[in-house]
Length: 369
Image (cartoon, rainbow, N blue to C red; front, side):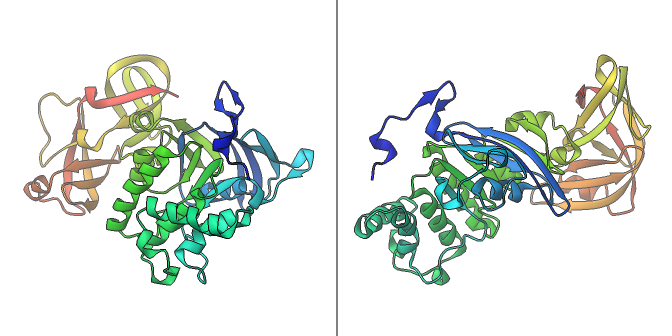
């Protein structure tokens, strides 16, 4: 059997063509109408995020060949693997993909070693060679000591790493990860995230990562695709999404307050009818507006001085974290403020309490829609 390292892959302007994912996925599944186009370059990690029911897992399962397309086409490594209009549908096991599901789906009757060796053996590699290759991969993920252990005796973090090793042991052209850390506790997730980042950095092919965790998306991905209602609403680098999210859900993902409205000079009239004064004037037109929770100051009495935007608000809810508190406020401009635990005590903030919210005009970002 000839491995990819023994051959010189074809290339085009995008890079090695045997390490490329290009897909248009269109299908209907129940209430979901999915129509998504995505391309991932060699060595690139693209995270797919979105609310529940947006179609994230269905997209990945369609790429993997587990859900048939209604329309569209999927190319893996320059090879057409599915196109309903052309009558092409390559079986899942022949698509040269490495797939890791959130349930890990290890074979319970096989040891960790046998699980990792399964893929190479299914592709015709002799048993001894496949086991030797599997031992190498278990060592790479730090699990050489559990080679003879069955899945039931492994921890969640160990199972996840075995599943990753099993996916990579077949030398896939593309790696598909579906919520790979969703079942792990906080401590295990932190350790596995570091491990996963190391392996993704060394993987030559494209990686498509479905996740609900913003930290996972931002820390692991080169690009983030935001999927809502079966459609892509934003496809950008993590820092661009953090700075200028294109939807309310994306704004919540990165912790920003987000609004739509119409600007005329320094005044933005929000869709709700409330008005904000911004520091940078713009010609009349539709805009999106973002305000960081740290830019929202809270006061027990109406403040005097520099803030150009002041309104009375009611504390709707409190989210208390280790070092800060996110205060959800109801009022003319519903908004989330971020304060310290000390400020929470000083202001005597409780649900239902009335406060004054203030935001400087210069702290409001806006851009054309």
